[in-house]
Length: 230
Image (cartoon, rainbow, N blue to C red):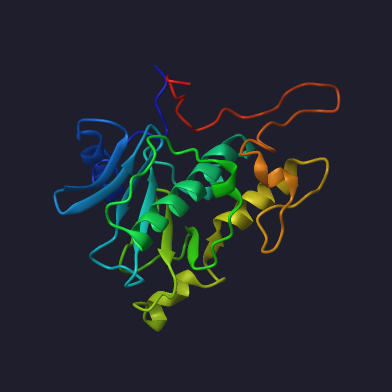
């Protein structure tokens, strides 16, 4: 019998958060629902997002978006997971916008948002991953992939903790999407960079499939769970 390499791990903090979120009844939307002192903002088949209250980096808002699967790092992702990364980016923008404007804002019931949201450049939002072996010593989870998203400025960071949020360890989600697309795209149109509005940005799945010049598809299976409603 095949063993799922990304199955929940006993003792993993984020696996525990995901498990608690999945126990909450109702729709995929979990706006400001608190479970065991954790403010769950969103859950769906792939991600669980919660607001970091204990040790935020910003007084305005700091959220964690965790993969429901116990994915160890960004290096387990392939081009087929580009739609997942795009959904993380869009979900982070939507949640941060809601927290920034109104605590009672109504969110849509699906993590994929219109292209206008996809392409809006909000410089006050910072979204990305802290890459191993570095870690945020206040949120020291290193083997369960999760994105940090916060509203600048990061006014609660000390200098030592702040190292994890500099270019030494930080991998911005736009840069990660752009590099994956660049590695598999024939047109070499990069995305994800400031002041760029490349057409490839408007297609969440752009670059997610790979193949040989002879028409043989080499795309790896995605880590994403299929939306049965789709």
